[in-house]
Amino acid sequence: MQLNGSEIVVECLKEQGVDTVFGYPGGSILNIYDALYKHSSEIRHILTSHEQGAAHAADGYARATGKVGVCMATSGPGATNLVTGIATAYMDSVPMVAITANVTLPMLGKDSFQEVDIAGVTMPITKHGYIVKNVGELADTLREAFCIARSGRPGPVLVDITKDVTAAVCEYTPVPVKAVVPPMSCSQEEMDKVIQYIEEAKRPFIYLGGGAVISGAYREVAEFAELVDAPVCDTLMGKGAFDGRSSRYTGMIGMHGTKASNLGVSQCDLLIALGARFSDRVTGNPRKFAEGARIVHIDIDAAEINKNIRVDASLMGDLKLVLENLNRKLTRQDHGDWMQTVAGLKEKYPLKYDDSKLSCPYVMETIDKVTGGEALITTDVGQHQMWAAQYYRYTQPRTFLSSGGLGTMGYGLGACIGAQVGQPDKVCINIAGDGCFRMNMNELATASRYNIPIIQVVINNHVLGMVRQWQTLFYGKRYSQTVLHDKVDFCKVAEGLGCEAIRVTTKEEVALAIEKAIAMKAPVLVECVIPEDDKVFPMVPAGAPIAEVFDGDDLEKE
Image 1 (spheres, rainbow, N blue to C red):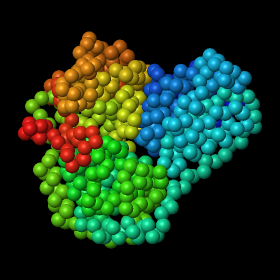
Image 2 (image 1 turned 120 degrees about the vertical axis):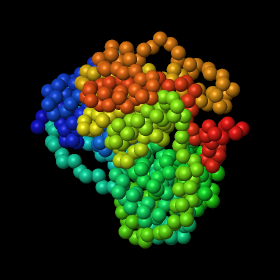
Image 3 (image 1 turned 120 degrees about the horizontal axis):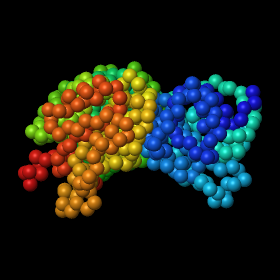
Image 4 (image 1 turned 90 degrees about the vertical axis):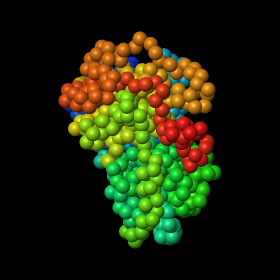
């Protein structure tokens, strides 16, 4: 059938199973928006308040559902406003297709109005990028973009389309979507070596990353932990891939990881990394990381093997498939003494906070209780992000969405909107600090426009908390540009943007506020006012070995 480029875009989206698009229109992309209007019963479009919000919403949708998220923007500043969201998705391996429209082909390269080389701008932060200048190539390009976004190690793909292509006509033939076959290229020899290391280990430890969530290896990881008889720690991105209430679970590892995880990994004789990339926030000083242990690395991306940490054995492939094979071959190990040692570390060094006052840890524990641990939590970046990772017990994958690699302030609200659209039966709660919330709080208007029932919790300490914590500990309490004491009233802002608002100043008010917000089934802001000098502990100084983890008690002893 003969279709114009814009209709081909819509037909390809339908072909790929896309039901929701997040975006913002403009001159160059008007033809595509006209086509979307005609297919509004098949593809829902969410108009965000800013293009960055659209990118974060597509990201949140993808993380929450496992599908490819889609965002759209016009040329020039519309396209460049997507960049931070694309980079966020790239760092955290999120499948996303960003569709932009550019000026017409004859106007390219002439500094035309709202022209920018968005494919060039995003080249370092996408798996692949295209600029489509021929309508005959449009359908195949879009199909390829979705395939690349979801295959192997997922990530964002950009498709930029010149405006004349969106109007040009050509023949379009629907093509069924081909299933992506997960790769597994490890040999039997490599598999046998890993099994040998596991059988020889006396003190194994499992280190779980975001690849376990992406691959859907939840059950396989649980079975593997039982077979190896090992404790399990996770990264920020790995939250929910292993049951946070399990006796094997020791909490997060790294800069703000638990003492049990950091000390346990430092004492183990075999560290098994599952879908993790040995980030600097995890390893601290890489020369001192698990230095007495053999290290086994299982990952889908060959580029990650030996990139940050030299390993003794590796298996490359989709984690779910690799573990299925490993689990069939493994015999159950017994490390009772080691498990008892790690249990002793957990008992000796529990996470703790001052419960005499309202604090973010208390808020997170209360949300855990009120929701029965069944909520989907998104976060922005900073102290509140760490507290949300530490004090809410995640039991299912795709229930903790956070910007791990890029550390994007302003990520959480858009991501929460996308997650709620993708998982409408979930209670979706975004945890933000007051500094982060200021960056994209305009997306509350998006939530109210569509009555998307998200709960926006603002942890308000009137400072840029994480930066202030570093200034307190390492910069002689010189609080340069981190104090936010001003006249901004977040509850009034929320109400002005069409949302309900509740302010909480005492511990007793938290549970009632969360219960009320859930019952409203509407977008609600809950502002929790906490002290400005609350700190995230434990902590490892940047570049130090993770065994040098300290907390508030250690500081008081100095």
